[in-house]
Length: 503
Image (cartoon, rainbow, N blue to C red; front, side, top):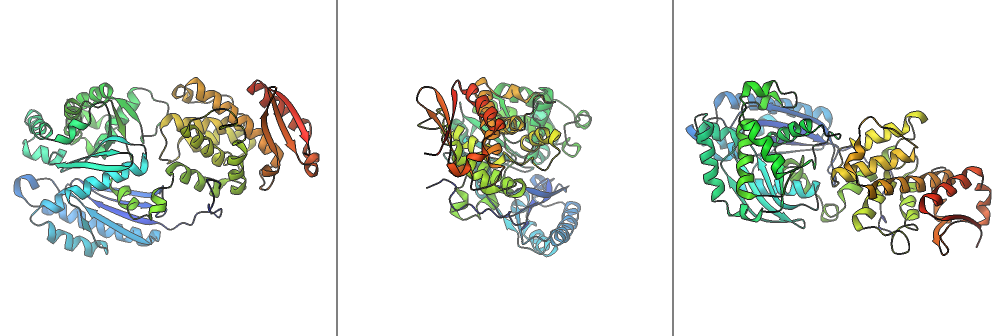
């Protein structure tokens, strides 16, 4: 049975859903294109209300912050209605659950939003943050850390399972209150809590998955400093030393200095030094091998938990690529046939590949025709940009670049503005070239129409031959261009081309 049996070929329906996240620092609305395995944000708005400011001292939500938050929620209600959201999901975190007037605020907030609001416990918040990471990085193995304004949630993940977790009251807003704005005092508080966090002992030598706007900004600063060629935060990876270095630098900067940094959101300039200090101390206590940025967190985890089990277990990358094929390819059915057609060259009877390489090959097949509507001179560059910059999850940066370059070369692109090739090793560069050559042969035989490739054979035969087999009814497809493409592919494989008609 084919791995893609049951795939629906009609374009995906647009059924937007909204998630409202009422945090200690910000109130945010994110509208996604649907309740699907890999939802794409179509609208995103954040209002910094500072609900958690002062809660550690007074025990109450600040009245001015409450007014701002309710105003934002009324606007979000209007926006969700205007966009046509089928559902509005809302969650509230540390500030609302801990303040003595939190329950009264939630009552008013539900009236303003016109939807129910789930006030998450610390354990629930950690669980949804971890589910978000698992949804976006299915192979995650390490510790998820979600830093909000009021708290830090830590939870262990491995093989898609969520294990031990803990909530610590060391979010930047709370630290500012508890330390009266003194960094050294805040550092002592953080060390005390992290020193008692047993879950940190499981982090040594593994990956730390950083969730939250403060840590995304820190990753963005490191990306700019390193002149990194791919400006995609999801799965951006730093070594512990790199992350510790940038965190230590940021923790020593003043809010005024941070406001002048291009890659930092000015609204976070006050809290970033404290968030950076938390990261630096966490790396000191936990000793992870690497820090990986996740753009998926509580909101995405909350939606992921609402999917049926079958969809939760589907491949995040292939789901996204299939949505692309259904929207942009001339024939989505053809792209599925291309997956099967390339199986003839790879696997047990062909070139060896790992399970991850096979998965990336299928993803490349699904994306192979997305640039066809562009002017021929721009198809390569358009495809390179679309794929390298797409809101894909379930793929690391080298894998993302492999997909982009494979389709870039399929359109015979030669030079690129950004040196993305530095993110790939020689083996995967060769695979990108080889797969693109197979694509070029396939498209000149099939004209991107379904029903053709299943009738055409392409095999690695004895005697170092590459044999193209066509039934007699398709013999008229042969011509100079097919012979040239086959010869080029055979040369790349170190084989001799042969054409067989019938049989």
